[in-house]
Length: 291
Image (cartoon, rainbow, N blue to C red; front, side):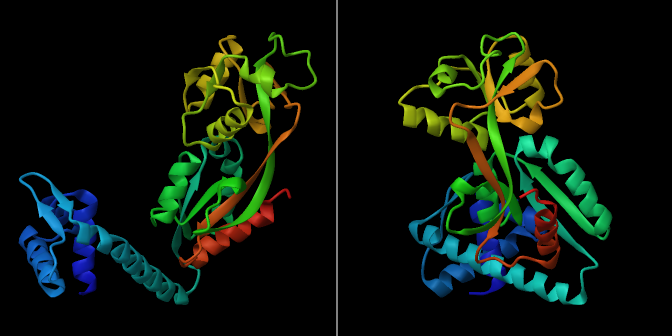
């Protein structure tokens, strides 16, 4: 069993095709087929079910896959660490950021980081915290911003900010004159929510479950301008971070009766190698942190 065989095995499992794996690896398909046959012969096991148009893992292949992923990730980490012995003159930071933070909090921070480290590249992925967590654990991202409440043991994290989730209503909504909003009153309203997988939705789903209610969700969208527009037109209310509406005169943000605070953190794989470029980004975030 060698690196090349495991790499070919991993790509076939990921893409479900010898042909597509060969294309992704920029090698001839016969070379991929021969490598897998040799691997199966060495192990005396069949790793793939070969169908006419689809290749799937056998039970034995399914058992091998996580080992292959860990080995390939370890090799990638080792190569990166050796390259970095040459100094922090090049490198890439792959970071996942939830939509609200990506639109309102991170743009000036990202620009300031690039100004300080002009030789480093930034690859920013927007997504829900669950999606970002999965990408982080799978090695598709180096770093991700997630909610402290949901950090799994496979990740290490440091808190970078504390923000309050507030009830967002139009200026003429019946809640406008209230000093705070109860959970019962909130859930009695038609809601405009992010789709499942985003921390905004995950928090509200958890609160609804604890309160024993089913949220009346009239609109689901991940587009912040659309959420704000729907609220302004009186078709629902929502809950967002204060930063999203603080400069919008048509919207009001009101606290929950029991204030809802979120600790947001920057996370990375606990067993992975945090490159010097990524460590520089983490240190920069902590330096800019308001807490």
